[in-house]
Amino acid sequence: MNDMAKNLILWLVIAAVLLTVFNNFSVDSTPQSMNYSQFVQQVQNQQVRSVTIDGYTISGERTDGSSF
Image (cartoon, rainbow, N blue to C red):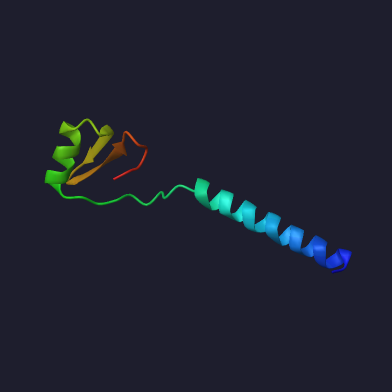
């Protein structure tokens, strides 16, 4: 194999590794919906960090950093 092909393969491997690393660090920012009984159970299990109530909509953040 010539040097150009080796360099191309090396850069493709580096790009694949970088893409994998960046995809693992991306956070899913889409809030998950749940019913009220699930919400109450998570509050009782101390899995909820903060809550915002706006009319009939309850949104918040769990202790693991995910939102609902």
